Length: 373
Image (cartoon, rainbow, N blue to C red; front, side, top):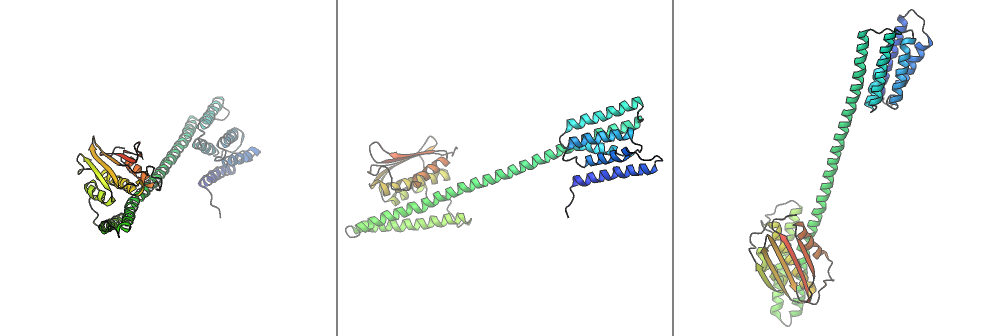
């Protein structure tokens, strides 16, 4: 069975009270009912049932019918309550001007009728009706404003929730990119080094065993480092603290190890203090150096490179150059250079990479120490 809405239930209740009061007034009256005693209450009550769909039309019909009822009908039923409800509904539905104008017209008509003696209404009754008219309109305006306030509060809450969801999705996307960079650095660089050193060991195994031994030792150390960093990364993903080091695995403090792991002959040119660098800048700088040296080993076609690292004017400045023939680095996926640019941009810095006019390739990065974005 379909349940009645609150508005319909209120309308039915008011109509029942008005009709019952009119019926009681008719039973107490000694006069015979006229057509208007029946038609006007039915018309006004029927119009009130449409107050939510057609608030202004319902108000006008109710006021006209009730206004005609009191001077023309023989019974004195309580139909005036329908006017109060219709005025409240019009104001509640945003038809405040129509409600005020209609209420004023009702009061003026009552005052005019009293002045000309068409239907006597004493001062007390007129004052009470005036108070009810004003209260009905005011209460309707208050309920509308309250409903609008609640809807606005609900909308703001939904917007805030939506903003939180968007922020969560944005953070999730940023975290995926960060993890992708970390895995690329941890796996891609070290495995590339292992591949380069393994190739060197195979070529030198027969002719220069000492070179092969050094390459195999590098492979062992690099694979061990890769496994350690991979465990650390997976531990972070699992939110498990496995005695992670206080400083990153890659660090400017381990610059000689980074250079040695590349398998290249690298001329290192440090400048300025590099031992008191913020952790995130330290990690980014070390990863950029490692990626740059890895690219030299894989793509440049040379075994020599120049590395310049300086702490100057509040920035860590990095420059990696080679003079090999593979100037365009076209064999790679491009993720390495993209990852380096993203690391620099995330700290408010920048990175440029491209062929040198005199030959070879250059990577130049600037990382602000204060991380301004």
